[in-house]
Amino acid sequence: MAENGKPIRQAQDKPKVAFFDFACCEGCQLTVVDSLQTHLELVEAVEIVQFREAMTEKGEDYQIAFIEGSCTREEDEVRLKEIRKQAAIVVALGACAHTGGVNALKNIQPSLQDVREYVYGDKWEWYNTYPARPISAVIEVDAFIPGCPIDRFEFVDVVKKVLLGKQPVIPDYPLCVECKLKENVCMFDKGGVCLGPITRAGCDAICPTYGDGCEGCRGLIPNPNENAMKEVLVEAGLTVEQLMAKMTMFNAYNPSQIDF
Image (tube, rainbow, N blue to C red; front, side):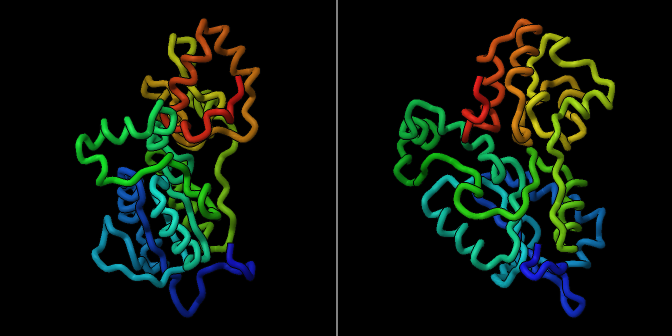
């Protein structure tokens, strides 16, 4: 992770960490706060210099930047590039930063102007906006933690890997693997729609376990099998349109990555 191949943490001092938020609900940062309360060793291993959810001080000297939220304005690009210039390591925190998240739903509306007027009413001119995008569309990202919100245990693991100079390993296999391990009844067998066959695992199949189909908040797996997905839909008596309606909840930034 560090340019010299050595852990970013040095014996004589603690690496400085900053948390930033763009267009998001800040739920991932709240998950970070929860994680730090039960993993005090992480708090002791780093110096947090900026974290709006947890402190008022704002230090600009940092080596690691965690960024939550999507880029939704031109001025966001300037700020992102400034963060990238300062930080040795940038980590995309959560679905909005990783895939564009729910913010990208506006991208598939007929008119972005209509969206502005619907949300802001007669004050729409006060607010700048453009099509939402993940931060990797603007700057280079060294690692990402998917999910809406992120998984606290995955966050802890990623932080430890980063501090040791290792590349975090995020699951690249389908959510269905975790569902099978939990012995869940398939959502398709229950008449539901689920993105499990093409969505990245790592959440312990929490949504299907509690009776709701996966909506793809962790993003798609590398090289998803479209043919197998279509076969599942046919067997369940469902349509591609029903699947796409669910997929665009978190993956509207680039829905064409699945070519049915």
